[in-house]
Image (cartoon, rainbow, N blue to C red; front, top):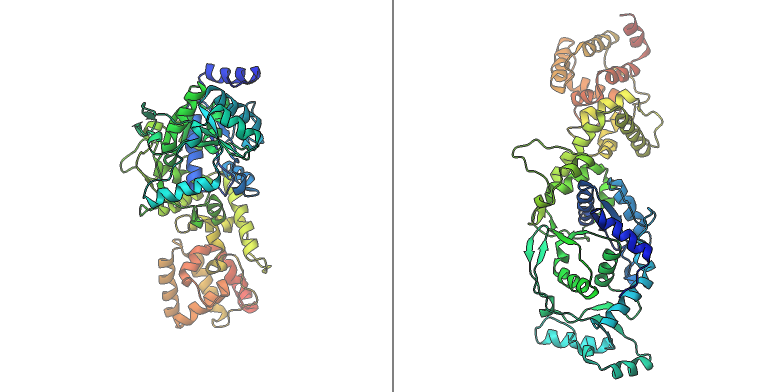
Length: 511
């Protein structure tokens, strides 16, 4: 039997004795986290927290040829950004590690030795050339390429002779018929006899690194994983994993396979789509909880309420309401418009709390400073920013939209512009008119301004052009009335006063 330290066994037993649910997210650091990976991590986390269990992170880096430098660190950063708490993993402690597969090679070597001893694995000396010929022949005859299990039938003497010559070799696992169906937590009974379609799989490569399937099974067992939730693309491999558990004499965890995430038109999400990476959503300005709610809205797991108003749930609300039985078994369609709606809801939610509102204002201040670093006359007063945020919460999608050039008038104060088309008396009356308007909405503003132009016998287009320059310093942009509505009454009056000629300002102060 595979020898495990007494301390290791004790920790495993404690976990099982308390019936503690233990799940894991086990990505490969071959790229950045995308929506599909986030969904897998999130559903594992929600399931564990719902049942008072633990969430482990394990880095599966056995394919050393595809590693991307910094990918593991970025992946952890994205998980934490999304609000997923890691109980055990690299850099997070835990007594059943190490949690990086490349640091567990001794464990895999001992496990391989156990399979060789009990006769469920064997050494394969086939060269790459022979394997390539098998593949080509299968394709020529229109068959699925598979290993023909030739080395399974080598005698002990033949194996010893090849080992004595130091012939390169890998280790293969003997597939057998698996008649019992998989009881999938999401799909129900699933039957797939892997030996009908595949040859014996490699479990230890010639470079002494284990393959994904082998290391996955060994790690899940030794780390006390009780439930495995992963993408449906791994469902076909689960039979292979169950056979490995049987070969070791281990109790397998329960398996649940999450359906495919697909685009709104039903096409499959692809990592090559630059817009499904979590980093893309972060850089675009989406909030973590908006993205998390977006993912669960497609995959199910929650009670469906007909005609219910769209809600934005916090992480605790999500795991309290989560039920694995309610996860969809059909492909999960993503609707990008829903993500935009959810992000607006998150802006509104943050505006309602004192601490989150203050953070939001500081974030806008930072965004504007970066976007208009060449300007010194920026309007970044807290009250002004809050007015803008309240206006934008139902119109814009992300905070970054507030720093677009079309809205530069919100932040950049006009400099050195003086209103010369109106008399001092007309300007004083205009300021009084604007100050008296109660419903500071574009329609009301337009009516009042048109009426004022008619009474004062002023050409309306010319007056609006002058007001635009005084308010924004721009020749183009939103309508003047809309601009005034966005800026709010106090900022509108402030900017108009700053554009008054000195004699007009003196008159206005004495009225």
